[in-house]
Image 1 (cartoon, rainbow, N blue to C red):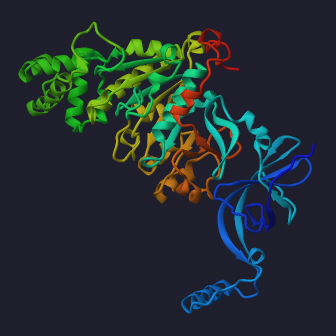
Image 2 (image 1 turned 135 degrees about the horizontal axis):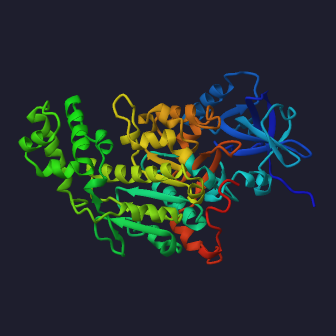
Image 3 (image 1 turned 180 degrees about the horizontal axis):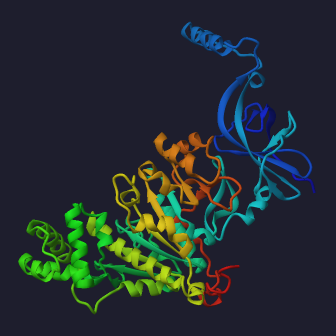
Length: 520
């Protein structure tokens, strides 16, 4: 049976990098819409990147003259009739060739569809070739302009350690996307995810009509929560031992003079992992006697003491050597779970310091396991999720090297990735942002933000700036290493997703453990 396709228009020019389509009369073209052209087993995929008016008239200024005549006649209460209006007026779409399929295989565009080829609206079957690229961590439906196709898309869990960027201005759906992605991680149970939540929106959902990760039907088995505050549901207490805080964790959170930095390292060399506790409890004169060198000024030690006392008076940090939750966090990640660290109510360094300590511990465990192939093989890949990532991934001229920039540069080798969420990608160091292999781009109003994306994405975003600017809340472009082009998507509303989930999803015991096919 021959498939009936909806006719949209015809190709009228121009080149491989720039195709123009004249739309059928009384037919609208939509920015971001995907069209197909071609005959037989060859199908070209065109993406609309701009829409303009067209008309049939010998005079280039015809439209201006007609508009003037209409205004004049309206003011004189006379009617205006345009003859053959449906035929004379139309829309022209500027398109880029995404590629073409031949015998079901997708190829980059190295040739053109025939001039005056018919252009049609595709259906879900036309995108069957994307099944190999859609990924197992699904987040929504394939989108063509404003229309949704019954085709799920997302990213591959195999790329989670290669870093993910989620970029959008306020209100465009970053939190919903993150919850939807975490839901897929819980459902797949192939990888681990460590989420630092500074606003308390991921666990319970925040607003009254919203749902959080605790409402997911896999949460009982595949979600573990740590929080320093009491949540409405049972969670694990978040307490960090003073011995786990390293000087590296403090360098990008506080301003250190050269003398203060040298004194801090001298204290660590002298007292080991107890340096922070001893620093906070001792008098400056006593410390000077115990340290092998007394070259440090008393004021230098006094500044370090004030910071040490400020840190250890926070409820989340403590001096009890027997209490530590970082090992428990890492144990849960090794089970390929979503681990949520609730840091709501904290701000500034009080929020970033626990995140830095925990992230460094995870990275160190995986880095050391790399030396033991059998142990390393059994570890699931993990992603560390950081909100407002520009605070620690900013221009390196202003922000010192830290554990998060180190993970960006080295983490993929050790199966540890970073998921950076930000409203302002322009504030992230360009060398760092180039490390992100998968991008979820939602609406971005700032042109500088869009330019950063264009220069760092794995796919060609050169013609997509206007589409990104016009994206509606929940609409996204997904750029990933496995995708042949930037995939347009509509992210599922998290509440709808968990409501519609059926218990037919494989139970946890039926899902293979992560070490079976890691290198496969």
